[in-house]
Image: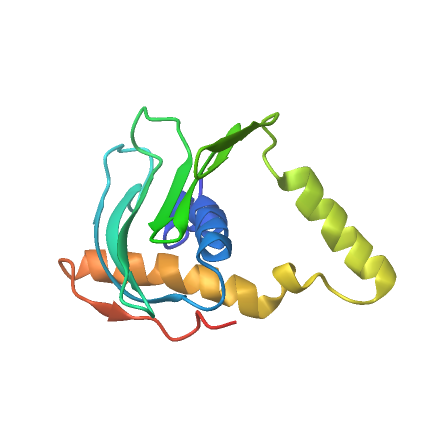
Length: 161
């Protein structure tokens, strides 16, 4: 069990944020958010749930919901715009009305493989750079700070990578 600040939300949440950043793309990163946090399970301190509203550079708003304290087991991303709709889950990806099913993979094996290939090549995978990690960490940290202060607005500084 994590004992550091953020606990499971920090450990696992950064991966969900990384996927969200990839879906949003580099041209419209998150710029601010407000969040509420809760500890629903006694054995998952300090908090195990984040509910946030985030704003992108273009002014679009959406929600971020991450919880390790509920019985919900789904992972789903939805991004909609005038240009189309993308929905991604554990085993299904939908772009507008076109669906693709695939086998569930935690992503750990490909991540470790990409890291190893970067070591051998002497050049890190750009998606695994410290700057990318900082951007993911900033979102989770901002959610935690906002939640600690009753849902105040937090401006994000490191999302344009």
